[in-house]
Image (cartoon, rainbow, N blue to C red; front, side, top):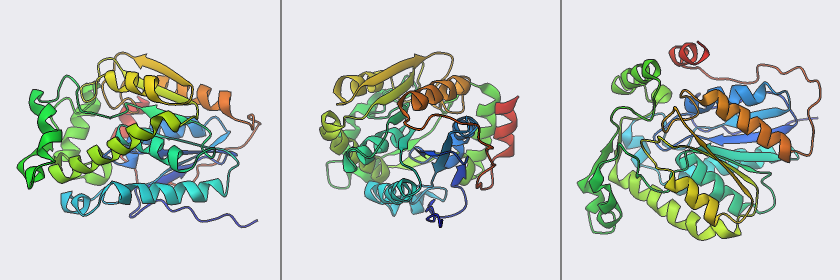
Length: 302
């Protein structure tokens, strides 16, 4: 039987891992890359029951001009294509993501009612309020509403870059400063891009009560970018049952930081709990892959 092609976005950073009957679509964060989800995707694929799809969002893995040329509906359109094609392969598809990707997973679930099996939400970012964020960040929503206000500021990542693992942090910092955006993402984010995130979040917040799929919400109590308020908000307002777990010994990038194995474990348990097709003995292939960050992989597997 012919299997539909899977759209993984522009470039070769997107990837597919595993050959299981249950589909999982994971969405990377704003200014991020599919690499930040590779370890979790590998862990889920190893269960033998999953095929994990990680596309590249429009405008990402390039420079800031590429990103500024796109808006949140452009980012979503790529995710929508991947989901529709994955649904043609799998009876069940779970959707999730990291940071902004977690918010977008909720939007997709609202656009496809009764078609998403569950949500895997990592470090959900409804507002930037972590301990490393500038205390003046609260005026950002005001700036983006005034003419040319979005041109007045830019968000520049600073240590610890969402990573408590010091060795990994130094690698990611070097990659960002050397412009390796397809591996480590962008170091800066312009005001127009922040505006797009705020626009998407406003839409998603209104829709949350109508999203009735089960959700796993994982968040660090030490998150430097987005405080636990974000996870608590999802727990209070999402229409479906929410399993919230707060992690310690990690920062914002929980999918690669010191607790990434716990993220895999909790995610695999959630998928198994809500899957209709129980695991069988399957030979899991390597799947389709793109170039990867060898340095990051060596740190995480150490």
